[in-house]
Image (tube, rainbow, N blue to C red; front, side, top):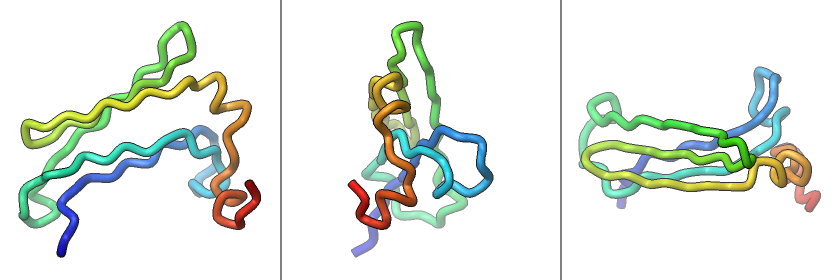
Amino acid sequence: MCDHSAYFQIYQGERISADKNHFIMDVKLEGLPKKRAEEVKATLEIELDANGFLTAVVRGWGKEVTKQVNFNEKKTTGKMIEDIKNGNN
């Protein structure tokens, strides 16, 4: 069965390769229509407020998902994706 969703991964860093940056969070928008990938559109909006909360909102096809993390904690305790993949927790 096909998964009809849009999956966004959010990283912080300046490296070209995502695995050299810090993983912050992921957001998944499910229940998208069964169409060709280029026919399904979704948007991602990211906002960092004065208190250090990073909010991501994904919208598409009348659906919306919001996810929030404390960015101040994530940027100091977040692991590089390379460490996560190698099992270095």
